[in-house]
Amino acid sequence: MPTKTSESPKFKDTMRPEYDMAGGVRGKYANRSKGDVVMVPIAPDVAAAFPDADSVNEALRVLLEGEPEESSPKLFPVGV
Image 1 (cartoon, one colour):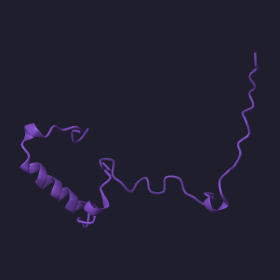
Image 2: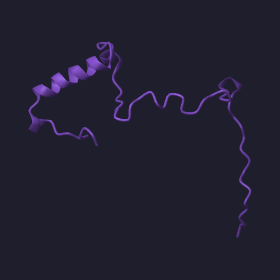
Image 3: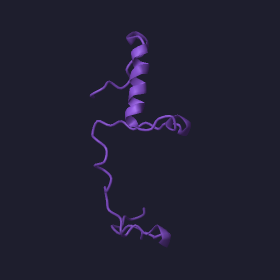
Image 4: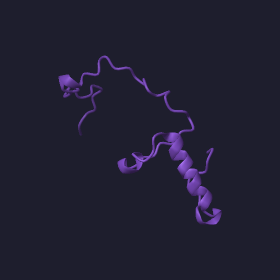
């Protein structure tokens, strides 16, 4: 039966020199988005049609106003 050792295998550094993260700052952009922001990937051609986030939200609200409540179930309730 093999015996356990407390020493873990040595870590072999395989990171290339051009990817040196020594000067990086952890969490530098973490506070940029508000806590209630939901990020959703949008296709590049669709994103090109909107100059900013407000115009995307406005278009989505118009779309939602045209849908009857029963036909569009809420998968992710707002405010949860």
